[in-house]
Image (cartoon, rainbow, N blue to C red; front, side, top):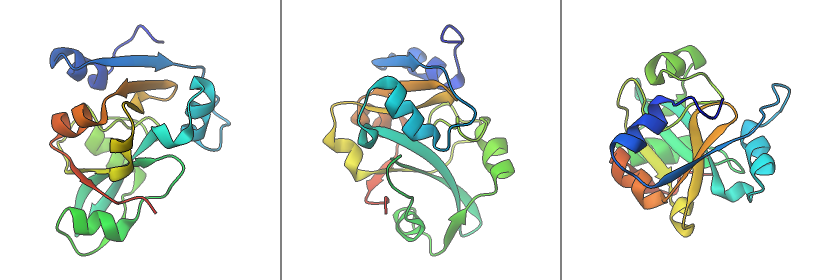
Amino acid sequence: MAGKGTPATALLSKRRISHQVHAYEHDPRAESFGLEAAEALGQPPERIFKTLVAEVDGKLAVGVVPVTGQLDLKALAAAVGGKKAKMAEIADAERSTGYVAGGISPLGQKKRLPVVIDASATGFDTIYCSAGRRGLEIELAADDLVRLLDARVADIAG
């Protein structure tokens, strides 16, 4: 499992972004994939970020928030210059990103979507986000993630 790359890991390697890939045995019965990752990797859950796809004024956008919080849809809409947001349908999120729900990475998505990363990410030297598969996380500097994705940073976690 760990030896197989994903579009996310390929992008980081291609761009020569310093990162580490961490694999763990995913339990399909886990209620929270993010909390499962934190426990398996021995990291505080505030450092593990989940990637959520929302629909803002009819267009998809990505919010990256700590697994301990929820995506504040109103704040995400404001951060991308929209008015109204709702969570995207799972099928739309999977089709647009090329990843399966529970393993969506903000990196290497099929379609480039606007990305907003919660401001709490900048409080850590490195953060963890999905590498594009359940049981696989990428550790990298939040600044590198922001720069690579041309992401906005805003308070979007509720």
